[in-house]
Image (cartoon, rainbow, N blue to C red; front, side, top):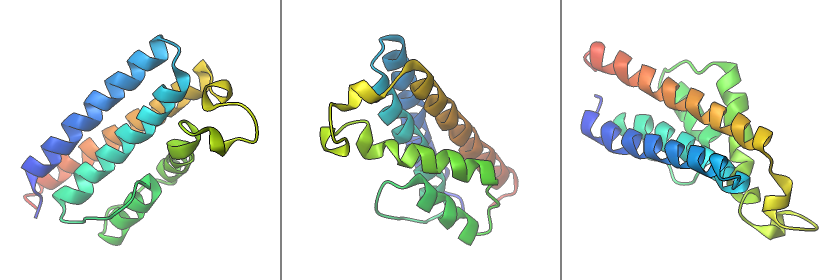
Length: 139
C-alpha cells in the first residue's frame, strides 16, 4: 500500500529544502548549499520509504535506497553513487572537527555545491517517479 498523504508531506519538504539550497548557492554559502542538498535527497527518499511503510532511523540516503531495493524497487547504480557522495557531506559540510585544519566553508566551492544540488535533484525526481508508478499501479 502507498500512503500518498505521507509521501506528499515529505516530498514537499524535500522540494522546499532543495530551493533553499539553491538560494544558499546564489549567496555563496556553499557548505550550507551542500548540506541542504543532502537533506533534500534524504527527505525525498524518506517520502518514498515512509509512504511504503518503511521507517528507518538515521540520515543515510544510501541506506534508504538499499531499503527500497529490498522492497522490490530497482535503483540505478548511478543513484547509489550520488547518494554516497551526498551522505559524505552530512557532517563535513557543518562541523570543523571533520577537518584537520580550517572550517567547512573553506572546503566547499560553487562547483561542489552545484554538483551536490544536481545529485539531490536527480534523487527527488527518482522519488517522484516511484510515487507515480505506485499511484498508477494502484498499490
